[in-house]
Image (cartoon, rainbow, N blue to C red; front, side, top):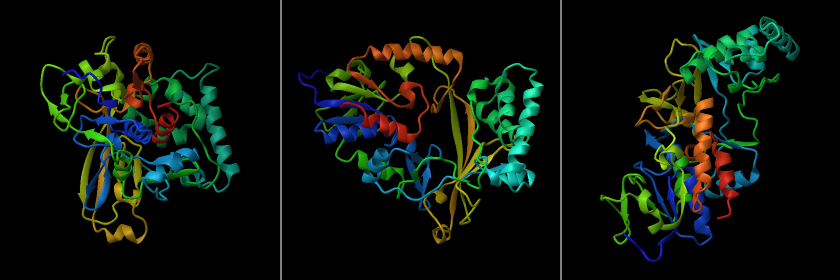
Length: 393
């Protein structure tokens, strides 16, 4: 299929926050965009599924937080953000601790009542860890963390949780993964230091639908497998050609948010990822765990955390007005072909390999690579939106 004039200014591969925000801003500037997504829904990993009247974060908990007022105002111009404050709880062998590490945590762990008492305890244990190194630098994550927070916090709240996340012992993980561990000597369970945080009222689908209002979109359309018939109301077709082979016939420019190594047909080899899976179920109770996020920090449970989704958007009596609840156990696993890639692996091999792919990407004059997969870099949601706001479209 060949067209003398490209129908679209931008073909956008992926309808997550990067792609949807780009499409919104480009459309406001009079550009014509086509957004495609290989999944059966729009929104990427922020997509919510409504179960029992509850917006379930299908791909894991997403909590919007930022210090950037421009980003905050932009998102609120699409959908109002509620007052949810992220205050996770850790469960270690049945005992509960507040997170992040703060005076509530230290009181639960040691019975201390003042910041001075807590500081003295932590400094004492940090000094033990430094002494054990005999003057050498920490060689792995375990040694590094012990020098930052001491043995009690490390063994109770970090070690086994981290090993479940990474599928490796802390002694086998590089020290640089943990450069610092924030410790607060105040009674404050607010996980983030950002000025603004919350969840879109009505769920993230309202944000995505608002961003993509008036934009042509196609789901179940794989850039690497499918083709499009532009002459018949954007019909997905099967044939010898893939969109990847002739996207220039569809649009002047490409915005690509998929995996960077796949775009280049794995020329230098495949990048490694960590991924997560979920066991989601309905519980016949209005309030299962009393908090949106509970981390399980021992090996006694195979999952890393349990999410109770209603607490992101329901508060006070609203929790009990909804007679059932939905919980998701989250499991961290090694990525295998066919799984959803979530987190880049920060080791020497993948750092070098991703740099090679980024060098290739920089040579693609009419392609914008953006987002976690296309940049092989972990992003929170707000920095993604900030990045798109700063692109000269």
